[in-house]
Length: 259
Image (cartoon, rainbow, N blue to C red):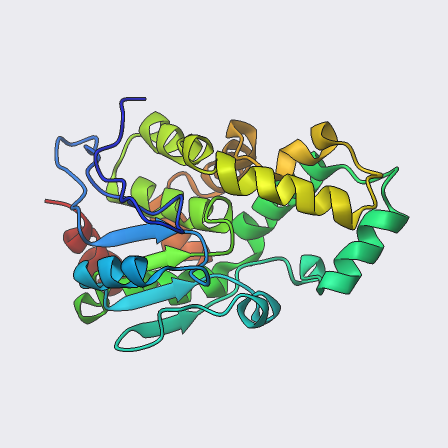
């Protein structure tokens, strides 16, 4: 994939970028300056906060669980509307102690690749209500520009971003390339996370076995997309039929997304 032009350099954010600037199948373009994506916002420097506000972001869609929100409190709290919509599989919402216990007691049987694939399948087929909330919210011009983020900014955020880009008419392979581009931006924080998980597992889990949760992989998003497309034919029908998003909201969002 060609180097993206719409990446923003922050001191404490590694995967903050504009999801627009991509050509659609009908020759139009996804607007820039409208929707952004990133990881969580608890470590922002004063310079980061100033830079964030210069983007005139009016709303934040926080896809994290309540536990995640409590443990990593956002530093962006004023003059920005917050939509808290967890699209995580609640069965995976561990406290720190529960995560430690899970790693230590299951270290010989954990298959992180299966966990990731299950997570994407869950997002595709069991978060209709949450996707409805997000898309309906973003279809209202008064809520834009907006930022979509989770904790790592790669999986939940990556999935929702892909749904929006596909809905806007961006070709599938372009969407896939943009999703995989996260791997080029998250190497530093994921290396830290790798060490953290090793410590939490009392070094019972190898770096290689952890790798599936530290990166995005084509097969994760592809299996979720195939599940959607095989059942509904296209993203428009999925959003309308499965997620029950009113047609008026879909029309408004598509108009906002492209130029």
